[in-house]
Each structure stands twice: as C-alpha cells, then as structure tokens.
Amino acid sequence: MFNLPFVYDVVLHVLESLRVNALKSSLIIVSVGIGVMALVLGLTFSQTLSRSLVWQFENLGSNTLTVSSYLPLSEQLKGNKAIINHGEYEMIKNAVSKQTANVTPIISINQAVVRFQDKSIQPSAIGTTFSYMKMRSRFVEKGRFINDADNSQRRRSVVIGKTVAEDLSLGEAVGQYITINNEWFIVVGVLAEKGNLLGIDLDELIIMPYQTSQSLLGNGVEQDVLIQMNVNDVSSVASLRNHIVQLLREQHNLAQYQENDFKVETTDELLSTFNSVLKIVSITLICVVGLSLIVASVGMTNIFLLSINERTNEIGLMMAIGAGRKFISSLFIIESSVLTTIGGVVGLFFGYLLALFASLALPEKYVIEFPVSMGIYTVTFCFLLGLLVSLLPASKACTLSPSCALSK
Image (tube, rainbow, N blue to C red; front, side, top):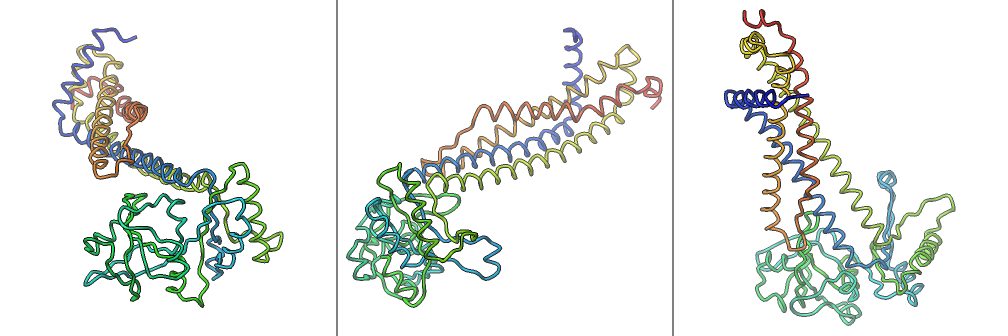
C-alpha cells in the first residue's frame, strides 16, 4: 500500500518533472489530444447522422414499401442490367390498389442541365406524381405542387428546391421559365427547406410530372422506375410484399434457383441498411484513430526512454539518498498517466467545442449530443494508455544501479 507521504513525494517530483520537461510534456499532450479530438468528432457526427436518418425515415412511416431494381456488383460488371419499367409500375399499382394509398413512381433524371439566363447548374431531378408530396413530406412554401392534370397533359411545369432557386438567382421563382436539357419549363412552386442529409443538399432538387419526365428522356427508352407505396393496414405489409415479389419474379421470368433482380423493402429495412453503412464508417474511424494513438504511444515510449538517459544522474541521486525502486517506477508511471489523461481531457474539450460550432451551421433537427459515457470511456482509455506506455521506461529506470547512474 502507498502511504500518504509516499504519494505526496511522488506527486511533487512528477509536477517538478513536468515543469522542467515542458516541451516534451506538451508534445505528448498534443499527440494524444489530436487523436482523441478526431475520435470525438467522428463518433459525435456519426451518431448525429444516424439520428437524422431515423428522422427522415420516420416521415415515410412503418407502413411504407419501396420497390427498386437491384443487381449485385458482380452482375453489373458483366454488363447485365435490371430495371423496373413503366408497365411493371402499372401492373403493381393495379394489383395493390385496394390495399394501398399513394402508390408513387419516381424516375431519376441523370445529368440534368438546368439553365436560367447566364446561370447553369446540375441539380438532382426526378419525375413523379402528386402523391410524392405526401409520401416524402415535400410540401411547397410558395406556389403549388405538381398535380394530376400536369401529369395527364404532360405539362412542362416544375417544382424546385430553395438551393436551385438561389443558385439560379430566380428571385420570385414562381412563374419564371427555366430550361432543362434545352427544354423550356415553368416554375409552379418552391419546396419548403429540408437541409442536408449525409452531405446531400435535399433542397438542390427539381420535381417534374412523371409522364413529362418520360417524354424528356425519350419515350422509346425504358426508364428505371422506383416505386413507393403506403399500405393501408400495417399488419398486411408482409403479405403484400410477398405478393409483389411473386408478381415481379413471374414478370421477369426468374427460375426458382435465380435470385431477385429487384428489392421490395420496408422502411425499417432501408433504415437498417443505412445504419449498417454508418456503423462500418464508425468502426473504420475508430480503427484509424486507434492506430494513430498506437503510433503516438510508441513515440511516447521512446520519449520516456530518452528521458531516462537524460535523467540518469537524477535517478542515481534519488537512489543514493534512499529512494526505492517502487518510488522510481511510480514517478514514470504517474507522469505518463497524468500526461495522457490531460491529453484526453484536452481532446474531449476541443472535440466537443468544434462539434458545437459545427452544429450552429446545421438545421435544428441535427442536434449534437455529447454522451457523458463517451467522456468517461475516453479519459479511462487515455489513463490506461499512459500506464501501458510507462511500463518499459519504468522497468528500465528502477533497475539502474545507483553507482553506475551517478557515474554518468
């Protein structure tokens, strides 16, 4: 057991050592602090993104089914292609009409070039129907959303996001004419602001009528249609999903042994997929930061080993006046643990501070949270890292011979 005078003496010597070796101490604190700060920032933002994903998918509801084409990467590399075409959309819509509401087709218009006067941008552009507004909670702030008449008459009308309106400097956007792939369109509405998700600007969007998008892309070319629907009864989601799977397998002439070239997913499954990706990113980040801390720990071990060589006379003198091996080893162990713990606290502080400043630029729904458990685990890890780093230097210091140490 360490008695109080012993601990007091050790602490005094450690504080004096930190003062004398201020530069080395600062380097250790900075190296640990940077690693911890990177870890805190990464984990904080991954948790924030995870919560924002939940918020986005909650808008869809647990009764939502999404039908999309799918092929493994290996099949894509072979040149194979899978699509859900317009005919299959109509087939599914008719088959599930009594059990669903808001069956919504969505066509992505890749590389849409949008121009207004001398401004030119390439935002995300889709073709869809009126039901998209309720399905995705994309309501308009000005003007109106596209309606059934726009679709049936293939009107060249569009609803745009705030970012599009700002980038094109449209001013009062409703009523303005823009060109999309050299075709004229009139802006009939501006969407309410949504913000960013996973670095994607949700307001950099143009929505046009579904049938208009088909004619824009070419009626002779089959377009890949993503289908979303709200099931009236949540308890029938599974059975309806199986029914759609069977319909598409028959339509695509898939043998029993062949895998589906499409996906029919619930909201929970979509959220689980995104969260799995985020989890992999978080684990990768932890591994990278952990590796950097290991490299830093090797550097710290070398610093302490060099410190022993520089302080050989001091160690020999302490041994000559009666300091035991326990006292000598305690000096290095406590000094190392104090430095790494201070580095951890500094990293936590600046990591939290940077996350707080970054949150000011994010929409209100992206609430930055800083779990107390993260702080406790981080400081504990840094303390244990200090113990581990100091074992070799402490062992070397306490085995020095007093006579040899004093002669150097």
